[in-house]
Amino acid sequence: MPVSATTTCPTEYLLQICGVSKSFGARAVLRDIELQLAKGELVSLLGLSGSGKSTLFNIIAGLTTADSGSVRLSGEDISGRTGHVGYMLQKDLLLPHLRVIDNIALPLRLQGLTREQARAQAQGLLPVFGLGDAAELWPGQLSGGMRQRAALARTYLYGAPLTLLDEPFSALDALTRSAMQRWYLQMAQQLQLSTLFITHDIEEALLLSHRIYVLAADSPGAPSRIAAEIVIEEPQPRSTEFTLSPAFLAYKRQILTALGNI
Image (cartoon, rainbow, N blue to C red; front, side):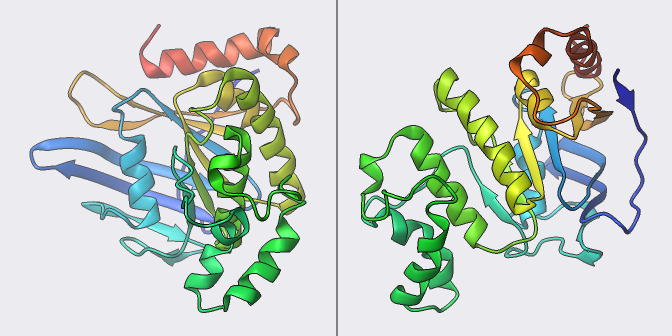
């Protein structure tokens, strides 16, 4: 059954977001955000469009500076600093003039490795990410799911201890999206990934997450806050049958209540 939990900023977490607030001019977007993620967890940040999910994503990635509060990674304050987390946006952003293996190897090239060295390291990842025969293909020759796997391999090769994913499967058709969700769970377990997953899809969050933070405003025009933290006790992997269970409906009702839709 659904479990709610109050949060603090204990030091044992990999990621700690403590008291983060953000305004753009006179418009307050986020207020006193408290969020934690342990090593190996997949935690979802769920909210409606315009709730500030992407703003918080950018603050964690160091692309935007919060007005107050801090972002800590393994206890170190990384507020306003880039290069400490890996992140992937909704679009895969593969470079069309580079072959798949060179797109994946790009983080290593930026770190100073030669093309041959970077390719050699990336080559070992291709079978792991289901791209064993795709090394010399161009991005335009890949399916949507393969493009996302290539982008995720590139993000993984960046080597950051935490990966931020901003609705990475939202552009895929329903069947491909479901397959990618199952594949990512397997990959996360195999590679012991720590993931903050941003989504507005309740079913996706419930299928993938260890915990879900619901981001919502108290009233129209008010800044968003963490309206609920929900611990999903159902073991992984979760089958589609879970979406028909009383427990799933109870979790969904709790999320909708936190979003203000009930």
